[in-house]
Amino acid sequence: LVFTEEDKYGLYSNLLFKFFLAEGIVCGHDLFVASAKEHPDNILKELPAPLLDDTYGKELGDEAAAKSEDFQDSMKIAWRYQNLPKIEASPTTYTKFGHYYDVSKKMSPELCQSVKWHSFYLHEELSFEPKMKAWNMNSGYARLLQSIQRIISQEGFDGSHPQKKPRNILRIGIQSLGSVLWGDDVCCGDTPEDPHSLTKFLYVLRGLLRKSLSACIITVPAHLIQNKAIMERVTNLSDMVVGLESFIGSERETNPLYKDYHGLVHVHQIPRLNSLICDVSDTKDLAFRLKRKLFTIERLHLPPDLSDTVSRASKQDLAGSAKLLSSGCGAMAIGKKHLDF
Amino acid sequence: QGQFTLLRDTRTDGSFLVHHFLSFYLRAGCKVCFVALLQSFSHYSIVAQKLGVNLAAAKERGQLVFLEGLKSCLDLLFGVEEQPGQPSPLQFLSSDLRALFDFVRASLTPGDGDSWKGPVLLVDDLSVLLSLGAAPVAVLDFMHYCRMSVCCQLKGNVVVLVHSNEDSEDEENELVVNSLCHHSDLILWAEGLATGFCKDVHGQIKIIKRLSLWKAAEQDQVQIYQYKIQDRNVTFFARGLSAAVL
Image (cartoon, rainbow over all chains, first blue to last red; front, side):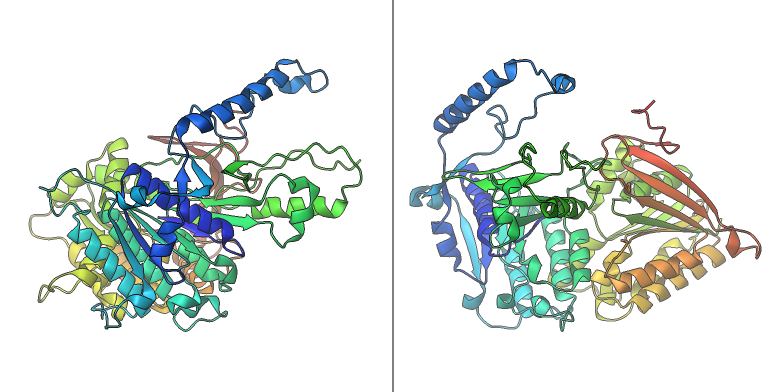
C-alpha cells in the first residue's frame, strides 16, 4: 500500500499517480482507478506515453559518457574523496526496472485498451446504501471498498478461480482520498466528525490487498489534514509512505540552492514485508525535477558553496528541512554547511 | 511467569521484537495466542521460518492460536453469512472489546489434552485498535482484563507492541502507552538514533526492568544497547561499539 502525500497544488502527485497506472498498462496488469475529482476516463486519456528504450538509453548514455570523462581527472584539492565511489545521481541504463515515460506525449488509445480496466467515479455510483452495516464508515469509502472487493473476487485476483488462465496483478489507484469530494471532512478542521473513517478504510483496504494479487497507490492531500494524529495512524497502516513537496509558491522556488529541482521527495516509511530487514537506501535526501520530457528523482545535490551572498537564512532553512526529512530513520546531515569558527 | 512486557517503538519499527518473542515462546513450548492486527499470517510465517520456527505446524498442533486481524475483518464485512453462535472476535468494531477478550481467554484456558508450559498472549499492535475506532478506555480495559486473566489467573505472560512518538499529537495513543508503561513489568523500547540514520546501527533499545513496581524503595533498572537488524538475526552491542566502528 503506497501512500503518497500530495504536494500543495497536486501537480506532481498526479504525475506520480499517472506513472503508476501507465506502468500497469505497459506491463499488462489490470487497472482499477477511483476518483472523486476527475472522471477516470479522463485520467486514463492523460497517461504519459512510454519511451522507447533505445532513444532514452542513448540520451542517457551520452550524458553519462560526457560526465565520466570529467571525473577521470584526478582530484587535486579534495583528494580524500577520490576513493569514494562515484555517486550516481540519476538512474543508469543498467537498472532496467520498469519503464520510462515521456511526459509530453499521451499514451495511445490502443495501448490503453489493451488491458482491462475498471473505474469508480464517486459521483456516478448509484446511491444505494452499502451492505456494510457493521462499520460506521463514510459511505463513499464504503462503496469504494465494496467495489474493489467485488472486482477482486469476480476477476479472481484472490485466487478464487484457479482454472482461469495466467494470474495477473491488479493495480489500484485512488486519487485524493480524504478530500472533501469523498464526503470526508477530515481535511476541513481539527476535529472531524468521524475521525476513524479514513483509518478504517485503510485497514480494510490493507486486508484486501494482502489477500489478493494487487498493489495500490493512494494520493492524499496531506497538507490539508490538520489533525496530525490521523496522519500518524495512517502512516502506521500503510506499507510505504512518500511525500512530495513542490517548490511552487514557496520561498524555495527562488532559493539558489534548489535551482535545479522542482521539489523534494520525502520517504517517510519503507515496506518491511516478509523479512526482518527492509531495503534502506544510502541516502534520504531526494529531490525531483520535471524536465521537458522526463520526471526524475535524484539525490539532492547542493551546488558548491562558492558565494557569500547566499544568506544565512536559507542555510537555517536547509537545516530545518533536514530535520523534517527525518522520520523512520532520522535525518542525514547534508554536506556543505556553513562552518562557524 | 506472570509478566507483562511492553514493547514500544519510537521513530523506528519495533516489529523485530515481536518476531523474536513469537519464536522464543514457541520454541520454549508455551501455548501462544497471537493477536496479529497489522500483518498477514504469511508475513509472520516467512520471518519465523528464518528464525527457525514453523508457524503452520504450530497452528496444526494447537500450540499457536492465530487471530489474523486483516482476514477477520474482511470476513466480517464481506462474509456471506455469519456463523451463528460464534461471533467474530472483531465484533468490537461496533461495541467494546469484550468479544476480543473472550476470544483470548477461550484460546488460552488450558484444555484437557494440553501439555503446554504456560500461556502467552502476544499482541501486534495495540495502536491499531485505536485507529479502528475503539476508545482508549476500552483498550485499557481490555489490556487490564487480559493481564488479570493471563498473568494472574493462568500464570502466563503478556507481550504487547505499541507505537509512540515524541511530540506525538495522537493524544489517545499517548494515553494508552503511558498507562501501559506504568503497569508493565518490563519495557523494551526500540528507538531510532537521535543523531539520525545510520547504516550500521539501526537503532537503540532501552530495557527497563520495573523493579519499582514490586518494592517501594527500588529504582527501575535501565540498560541501553544499540542494535543492527540482519536477515536472520539481530545483533546487540553496547553503545558506540558497533562492528563498523571497531
